[in-house]
Every structure is written in C-alpha cells, then in structure tokens.
Image (tube, rainbow, N blue to C red; front, side):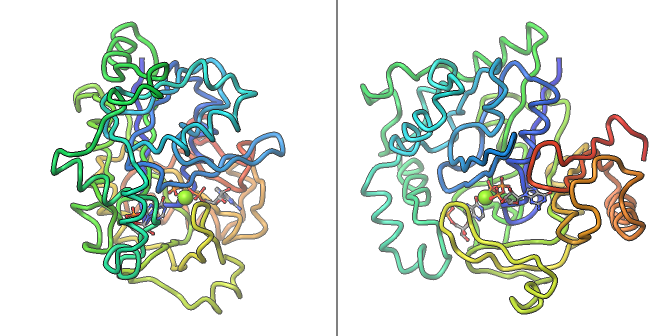
Length: 340
Ligand code: GTP
Ligand code: IMP
Ligand code: MG
C-alpha cells in the first residue's frame, strides 16, 4: 500500500502530466485522485503517438483499471468536465470517474468576473477560467456544491471515504496536484499567485487524506523554468535567448507564450522543503541537452546532462527518481529501477 502525491515544484507546467502518465502506467495505482485548484490547469499527456490536453480529468486516465476521483478541494466547471468525459470516452472514463459531492462549481458569472477583472486578468495575468472568483465565493460561503446540481448526480461520490477505505485495504493511491509551488497563495510570489495553496499538504486535504497516510511526495521540476502570467522571476532570460537555446513554449489552456528562465536551485530547495518532497522528477532534459532526446537509460545521458542532474540532487538533498527526456511516457529514465 503506497499513497503518493505529485506536485509542481516551480510555477506550473513542469510536465506533471507526463510524469503522472509514466508513473501511473508503471505503478498501476487503484485510485488516481486529482487535487489542486481546478480547470485553470492544463496537463499534457502523450502516449502511443496520441496527445491529450486535460484540465480536470486525472492525467493517469489511460490506466484503464484505475478509479479516477476529483477531490472536494478542486473547483469543477461542468462544461470542461463533460467535454473531457466525452473526448476520452474510448478509455471508459465515464464509468470510472467520480467527483466529491462537496466540489464547488464554477459558473458563467465566475468566468466573467475573472475575465473582466482589471486586477485578476490584467495585473495578475489569471487564466480567465473563473477559479479566483469561485474560490472567493467559496470563502464567502455562497458558492454551490456538486450536490446542489442534478446534472452531477451520477458522477458524485465521497472521495475521502473511497481513498481512506482503499488505503485500509492495502490499495495504492496516487494524488495529482496542479499548478506549482511558486503559484501557492501562501508561499508563492504573492499577489502573483493562484487562488489557493498548491503544496502537497493542501493536495492531501483536497482529497481528504490526512498527513499521516502519505508515503511519498514527488516534486516535479523542468530543466529550465517557465512562467505564464505576471510576477517576479529571478532567473528569467529574454525570449531571444530562449529561442536561441530552443526552449520557447506556449500554454496548454490559454495559448499564451510562456516566460522562460534557468533552473533555480534556491527555488528548488525551498519548494522541496515546504512540500516535504521525498523524490524529485526532472523533465525536459532533452530540451536543454539535445543529445539526450528520448534516452531511457541513465548511462546513455551526456556527461553535461549527468552533471546537471547530479548537481541538483546534491544541492537540494532529495533523490531524483524520474528523468524525462521527451513528451511520450516511454521517454523516461526511472532511477527507482537503476542506481544513480
Ligand atoms: P500544469 O498543471 O499546467 O502545471 O501542467 P503540466 O505540469 O502537466 O505541464 P504542461 O503539460 O502544461 O506543459 C509541459 C509541456 O512539456 C507539455 O507540452 C509536455 O508534453 C511537455 N513535456 C513534458 N515532459 C517533457 C520532456 O521531458 N521533454 C519534452 N521535450 N517535452 C516534455
Ligand atoms: P488563476 O489561477 O487563473 O487565477 O491565475 C493566477 C496565476 O496563476 C496566473 O499567473 C496564471 O498564469 C497562473 N496559473 C494558474 N494555473 C496555471 C497552470 O496550470 N500553469 C501555469 N500557470 C498557471
Ligand atoms: Mg500546464
């Protein structure tokens, strides 16, 4: 029985979707539970030449034997949820996805308030998906829950009960966070952050699992950093430099060009400390070191890439277990199976 949480170590878009796909395909958890803010997230999942963009469905969906749950802490947009249920229908997703009856529901008013807000949309650079206004209504205790809508009836469950019972029965549970440490309402670059804490403790609370039941916390970092929206970014480089290095990027949800920066050791240390990380995953090593594209064995990485990885591990003091060398789930070095 293992209960793991995966969180973003930076400002989101670290490649959590890719790491989750690999880990869930490999470890086959009985339950995959989505924590985090809501449909402001955009996870990318690639396997067998197919590419999926997800905003609410747990990224481990391709593992057909896993039950997929969305925790009470996660905001749900009905249209986004149903779109994904239909779009992923060949994975029998409707039969095995459930949301907690206490999930708060985003409505049109929340989306309008987000997009029309000078402060949220213009100053902070929010995603415009209604998450900030919805979480604010939740704090004011005016928002409606899934249980208040008939259209959610067949998808509702008691997520904490399902997860804690599974753990009592020695099943494996995988909890997916969204966004990243730098966007945490408590520990990020306030006010340029999202509308709640994004660290592992809150991810556990989002799905109703107590801290004593968590075995592993995996913090995901990209080999360089990206940030969308406004706010401080100490290691930022110019777009021109990013293009020269071949590391420019565009957002999954908003299509916005991502700001790019170099790996930030200080941020990684802080992020691992507050998340209580027991493992780190490093993605996009191939984009920094082109000769490492799709490498699947540690010994096949270039000298420079190995040096980069080993420096991070020794400075941060947390073992690196997963190294990603391409977007497909197969492009992965699993150091749980090899010794560094
Ligand atoms: P958020 O919840 O928004 O933080 O999403 P995320 O962490 O899942 O990341 P997102 O999918 O938004 O962005 C990561 C991008 O990098 C996607 O396009 C992935 O397909 C891609 N990606 C992930 N890992 C690798 C990798 O190792 N190499 C390359 N080349 N691309 C990768
Ligand atoms: P909001 O969460 O839509 O209110 O946006 C607040 C800030 O968080 C903005 O800077 C967004 O760009 C950023 N943000 C929210 N979700 C994500 C994500 O999934 N990836 C990257 N940035 C995000
Ligand atoms: Mg993303």
